[in-house]
Image 1 (tube, rainbow, N blue to C red):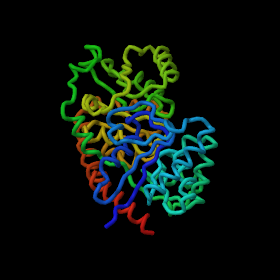
Image 2 (image 1 turned 135 degrees about the vertical axis):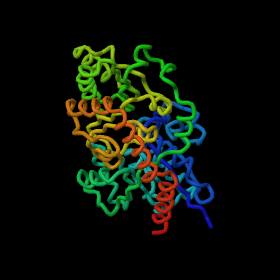
Image 3 (image 1 turned 90 degrees about the vertical axis):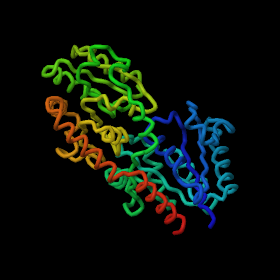
Image 4 (image 1 turned 60 degrees about the vertical axis):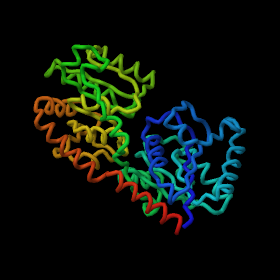
Length: 379
């Protein structure tokens, strides 16, 4: 039986740490070669080459044809030629501009299908992205959303027909978990102040940018410190430097700057997550979170904001706490409750781990992808 020829396409690739990037690499690693012939193209630029990315031998069109506006049509034509050369059956695009390029290039080839991603709840409403989202559906594009919340947002914001959107959630990635938990760092070995190693640690794994709402978490930490003084906030994630400076200024105003530890981004936060006494995600918009899956795998007590698909992962009062977004007072109350009741946190953590392995087992999610690809190609 001839394998299905699939092209994975992204516009730019900055690192392997973002959710979409992790998911793209997971698919490249796990979709079986026996049934699929996989190709990987970066339409514009690979900004920060890493071994984990380069192992997949991406073809970077920006390196060959430039990344100026004038070169865009050359890259588009090159993509069209690759589709023809490789006899591509299906393109899965992982970025708005990548989706736009895929739609145009495939329409010239008149043979392959395009699958776009809907992995957010509409927080980035720039005009060009809205135009792309609305345009692509007229070309018969199908979509994968990683949560029901993202599916509904695509319909609400762009009038994407619900029947064209299939929900396939992110998996609990076995290799990443095994790698991260193989030798987790003990607190005494963490590069944090010694006095922090013996206190309570509130942790969040999220890029430092406005949508993740670190400001609410910092304000909540101020409230927690009034009740539990020996508490520290550990922030793990790539920073937007201007926003980080704003947050540091906020911490200075609140008088808690020495209690906030800015760790920066790391490849596999699971080496550190088991050290969290409470794991938080305070985003004010989120579709589905790999960080929360990893919190659950590490059996952390979890508090998340009630946005997007986070309540699809965490069941309030059963596997963690789900709190109103942008409400530091309630966020602080739930963190305090977990810090003061470690047995409750252990119960939540064990339930959360069982839940995510049951719902998002890697083999189950992979099977959903295989069946989906086959159904799209054979339609």
